Image (cartoon, rainbow, N blue to C red; front, side, top):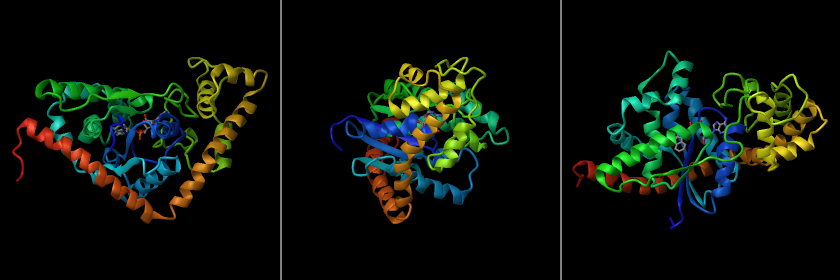
Length: 333
Ligand code: TYM
């Protein structure tokens, strides 16, 4: 790799990617790929923290690789790989576990949310999720991590762990910066605009999947929850539904909220929803076409993941060897 700064980010193959994942993360990745050396990971180990159907998980992992490419990530410029193919992720997690405190992990809001959602399966992996995420990032001496707003707290703990480790052993890890987009960082559920749009949501009407056909996209937007006013105006607190639609529209078109307000002055919610729907359909059309084309060539996808894992391993193993040495593990001869 060159002397460009390095990016690392990841997505869980826990469902088909949503418009939230795209606008909060992947769309920005494609814009950063020339300026940075980028490593993008399908974090399948993280996904195991919630029960999965094994066959479906395998399919979703491959499908996510196709989506990455379909969204515009160039495999010649970016390393794209599966987390479980690079064993250093699990190995560094163990070491970092010994430098992370029970108290700080207990404060993670995502852990609290997911424990509430799956009270019958509050497993240790779920609790340890942020440490695996820290290992992902720190293995690659990452400069920048482009994510949506919901991952901010996980980035903070990653930085804390890196700084703590460096304070004991010298400069082992680069302390990464977080990159959160100004618009689109938190796309909300269409039926409940006070909670985040999520690919693992049970109610399909809550999210737009990147693979939803045009009529489904139009229908879901038509049904999106709004408010009893008739004015299209940005006000997250009192008009979360309309504000969410404005966020989506702004993120896709590049128009500011003021521009959107004047574009739709005097128009009704139905007209605005139709415009957001049409814009989304148009934005997703080329992605969907490319996705279905790529999914016909699974060997090609597997080859990209194989190459990606080899390239990622080379970088990750250098950091892991350094860490093992620093903490006092005897090298294997
Ligand atoms: P995941 O799979 O939940 O989401 C992938 C990316 O999409 C962003 N995102 C959103 N952005 C805007 N609005 C939304 N409604 C929305 N939902 C999700 C997320 O912030 C994320 O950037 N823990 C991570 C995966 C991960 C990771 C990493 C990320 C594992 N290791 C290392 C960065 C670096 C996650 O669950 O993402």
